[in-house]
Image (tube, rainbow, N blue to C red; front, side, top):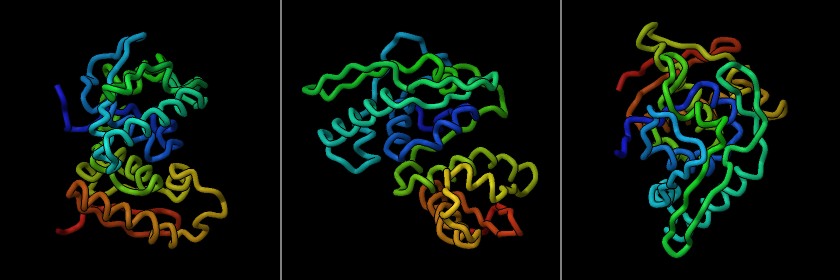
Length: 224
């Protein structure tokens, strides 16, 4: 059954997700959107990629989307990444173990790396996962998408405390910024943080406002 309530990601997957390009994240979302993530995915099983959904999110024709997905899969299969396991240890491997494709039918099946499976499926205790809205992946910036993930992880605090705070270091780490990038925090706020809040409002209808206090950003619900 296809669900659009959100894509479940374990908090330990964030260290992996933040290193991915926007097309990579769109691909992952399209793989997970139609799956029951409450059930632990089976090892050595091939799961379908929703190429039609990927085409829509990237605004590509179907044949272009198919070729793009193949390129993404090859990259994720051949590139080693750090996967933080539930016990905190780090496993270095690729996200995709192998895959099958049929070009004439535009069908692609992937076999997830077994170490990544618990971060995208199965039982996850409350407070250890977030729900990503796949609509946000249609934005045009990898950095703003990464910041959305960090905001989504902390959004529950708004209901409980009326606000949440992210430090400059937390944000810079999530965005993988070099020391020379956005050296002035006000520039980071103006060019990345505030546009991300606009993205969240335009795509999800959630109105947030932010204010800078020294090396911290305070987030609150805004008035519509």
